[in-house]
Amino acid sequence: MTVTLIGAGNLATQLGLALHERGIRVMQVYSRTEESAKTLAERIGAEYTTDATDIKDGADFYIYSLKDDALEDVINKTAAHDGVHLHTAGSVSMNIFRGKKKSYGVMYPMQTFSKSKKVDFRKIPVFVEGCDKETARQISGLAETLSDNVQPCDSAQRMTLHLGAVFCCNYSNYMCRIAEKLMTDKGLDFKLMLPLLEETVEKLHHLTAKDAQTGPAARNDHSVMDKHIKALEAYPAYHKLYKEIAEGIMNEEK
View: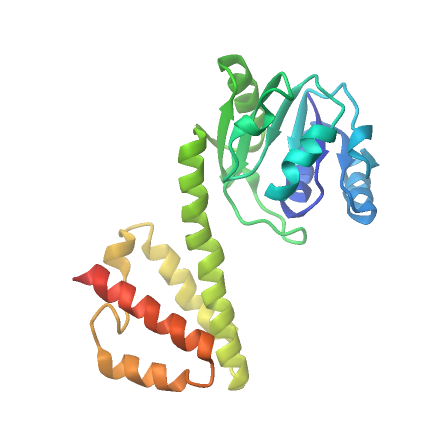
């Protein structure tokens, strides 16, 4: 089994390392940024290019891990047509390949990735889709070399997964960024929040998110919320966001 990685960002880096560890040969790495392409290629023993028209035929899989708005342009420029072409995006239909590649689909690993933080792909749910049954089978086979949790998922379902992931991961992390800012401004260490965050996630293994909701908004405690809102007057954006989220929680609890 051979792979060409089209992209060298956060996900592509972790995917390339995981493939390399499983003994799957990565033939080539593409990135428009030479430093990124070269760095990843050297780590996994691959060739690299910064020109999509130089992406070679001969790989079993071409995995596109790019920004959504760059996908179509790079697909159009990629000269390789053999093999299975698949992207890793949550909110892009597999039909972006239609009429451009013969065999295509999606392999979406639902996780947050950073170049510098190694992940255990075995624990990551991977959602797959193929343009036909045989292609779906091939993509599932690739995914199963990486993850113990591989599931079929169509484009509409994957969009919902990605939307949920944005709320659960990206937006909750932004809440942590706000807390970090507020605490740093008062000389407090944000790591004091880590036990609280860990218990918040642990509860979700046992309770629904609705049943796990606590805090002043959940108990309709306007006295505490008013104090918080006043304390946020120096932070207009956070001030507005706090009120909107509190109102959302109170409306849910009715």
